[in-house]
Amino acid sequence: MHRTPCKESQTINEWTDSTVYLKLENLQRTGSFKIRGAFNKVSQLTGEECARGLIAASAGNHAQGVALAGRERGIPVTIYMPKTTPDTKINATRKYGATVKLVGQNFDEAYIAAREEQFVSGASFIHPFDDLAIIEGQATVAMEMLQQQPEMDTIVVPAGGGGLLAGTALAVKTIRPSVKVIGVQASNSPAIASAFKGVRNKNIPFLPTIAEGICVKQPGKLPVDIIRNYVDDVITVTEQEISSTILFMLEREKLLVEGAAAAAIAAVVNKRLPVSSKKTGVIVSGGNFDLSKLSACMGQSANNVQNF
Image (cartoon, rainbow, N blue to C red; front, side, top):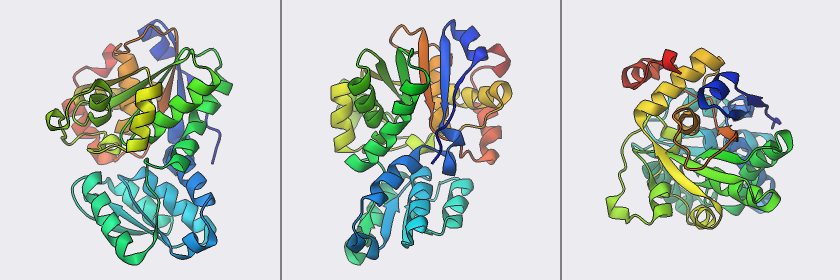
């Protein structure tokens, strides 16, 4: 794993009239923060657990982290991924030596299939977010940020299953409790935002999103409990805002970010934060974006990028 940069964005500073720091986990090994939790979890497995092999379900980034962690310990890995997963994530997972099985149209369907195989095979299941070792691994992102930019007053975090947001909240509220922690979800898939605000399950939308990495219908019980207790707020952004931000980051920052990462940045550049912040940290969670979707981004984009 790398200690990734926490880069100040002059363009976003000028646009938002604040100071914004981008924690570039898109430059992390495997292209996302997920390797942190995967390595932490796999490092704690017993010899007996390793001997049974590893199995996981993932929308793509957790898959790569588990595949690499398994390869480095010499453990066979099987990953269930949705059929809608970008080819870049599927191919990278296979490159790290894992067996990939494509099942279902979303993470939740792939998760059910993985659990069914795990029940039969007895392999060790590596959950992408509902596991304390995973959450603790993801917390290291925020711990680094607090060291790199100690003057931050707010940290903005993309959320899907909730592992990164829960880990961030635990780290921040332990080390510097005055710092606000804001979660961001796609409005097409707002399970955590809805749970945070007390919305009943039957009223929560679950639609496809360009931020497929945070498209989770059923977030983890453990991270949601942590989020309710420690996170200051959870908000949503639209598909148009996410798409515009992907293009903005490519044009202005020369960085390719995936939809999940763009969601957090979108909350900042569209001035959607529910708190006043002068020094804002944003976790750019990953950069494993399918380039074939760039044209779709342009079609969905609500704003001309030049307006930022």
